[in-house]
Image (cartoon, rainbow, N blue to C red; front, side, top):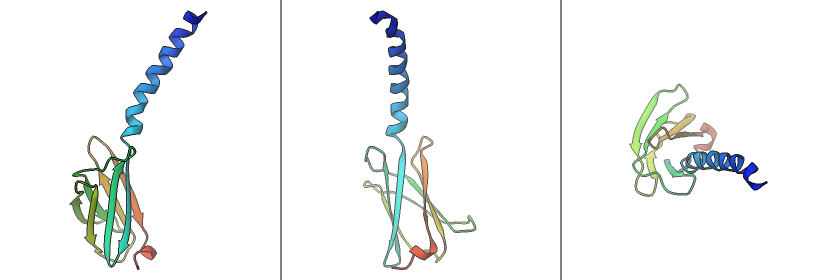
Length: 109
């Protein structure tokens, strides 16, 4: 009777193993403003920081305001470029990308 379930169990195991790397590489970004400086922190779902990740900052008109790179701890900071809704994008390589939106109302400390 055990042999009857073996193909199904193997298939479930293969599906789980194939999906696990995708979960492990989801990228997250968080941003906040302090003293007119925007601070970002980027990390993978397992908690490992995004090193040398590309940061792009856009205003509400989708115009790129600046570009930078995360440090060894997954951080990048920059002076507040303008008081507007800002979209901050992290590109962590191999298609890993996410964004964080800072609303205009959140830009005042």
